[in-house]
Image (cartoon, rainbow, N blue to C red; front, top):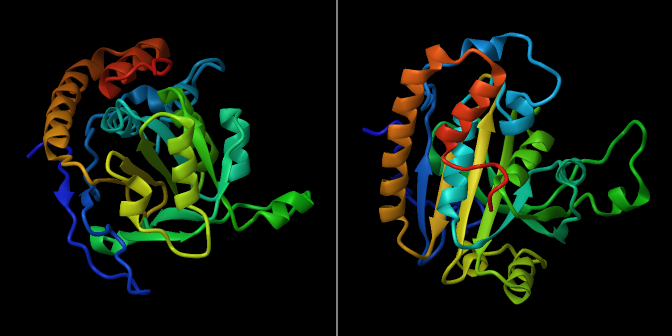
Length: 284
């Protein structure tokens, strides 16, 4: 079996009677590593002091807890959504994400949610839940923050570095989550995506994605009892793409495993993360 193996979802009704994992016509696939990270050998430098400029964390959101697998996940998200315009919802830390990515989000009423403490895909994927955003308590949040605490933010992504910047906003919690919606380029399609994520009624994933869209949810577990996962969903058949991508990931993991003992400096490690991810941070 590949180090990354996606299983098709067994869709079960959520507590409100909707389908948590998907909807009619949408194929949903889960990757849930549990205690087995896809990258088993780690660079010892992750547990040492780093220089103050470019570090594993600033460049790839990699640290000595959420380690090299984060770069691998970033590459997978980017490749799964290739050819489409990407928009992301960072869970809860909307305003911090605006600061780290340097962009103003589109406000929406619904966000996709995964429960990182649950052990099985069917229990983890909660589907769409009302949006929410953190409001500072000290100093007290602004009137605007308090008025919009029930709205999530939808951010455009231009390069993988934007995805890393959103991770910088969310990764310090017990678990962190970013949901990427990739749809056809253009302002009209963005308007339809935002409209599908607004309003009083819980959205259906099939309506949000449309015919061409792809949803990829990345959840990272940091504390004990919280696990990583990737969820990929689309009306299009993702199986050929997932098979090709996981095969390519297996080769890159093997190459990293053979090279990790030779890495000495942080710049060398950063080049290895680019090779492991299969993407360049500043290339669309």
